Length: 52
Length: 315
Ligand code: SF4
Ligand code: SF4
Image (cartoon, rainbow over all chains, first blue to last red; front, top):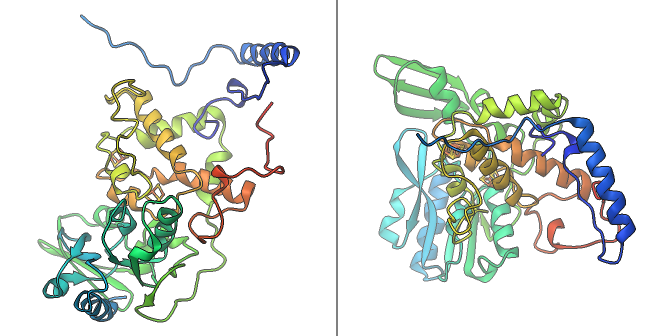
């Protein structure tokens, strides 16, 4: 995805076991922070077709 | 290259006459110049229609999927690697096949030649490393090396990796080719440039799916682009849908693509969608030391687990 022009920090992949609540919180916080720093996404957005 | 055909015919005829195979898959002359088409020969009388020259770029492994009969198949280096992939993926049995190996010196790029001349090409003749094209009021000769398909120019597996009989001696493999120059050029771009680059690259795509149909790896009974319940991706020409189709198609080929170039060759508008599959091919090589279709003995990286698999991308 990065190769096609999506910022590296916009897409995250993580393995979290259902027992790893703390890791889950940590990852979610990191993801939110990273994406917030990038600002709103401008690519790969599809607008609904306008119906007259 | 041109002289191989006698041997191909001889082998095919023998196989069919001896009843060793039910059909031979090779090429016959296409209805358009520079576009030879796949041909299934089922009787010895039909062998005369087989041809071989530098317009046989389509990957014949595509025609093996789930066949039940005994098949003789003409295979260049890349076809043989896709045959290996087919065997590994249980799409055909090795015992069903008699592989007629053709050491290959590269196929010519019909898009390149068509773009280089001004009129419609009606005839193409090949001799001594030169390709001459003729049309209404013009005739032009190219050095074959200059008009090779892009993937052939950087090919390092010209010889079949698996075969029962060869039509000629093995050819020397190209050394010192930089296979991934184009991929690195894109990697060096900024996010914005990458995005714009692929926007431009894929803009002419008409979603005809010729690239998918020409690829031996794309054998799912219903492709994700054709599904409507659920509909994974829009079917129109919205640029986002086009991109989604292309990067997902490429992902489905990860660790399997042999860079045979059939997809690019089949595209009516000349899109180099191989840039996407090549990036994945390069990653497979760098991360897992894997090149698709070289051996029947190893499982591909995406269906095996090793404790030391790279995992930097998992956070
Ligand atoms: S994706 Fe293209 S180059 Fe790769 S195996 Fe399929 S047709 Fe060949
Ligand atoms: S063959 Fe070319 S035009 Fe057709 S779907 Fe593929 S990239 Fe698009």
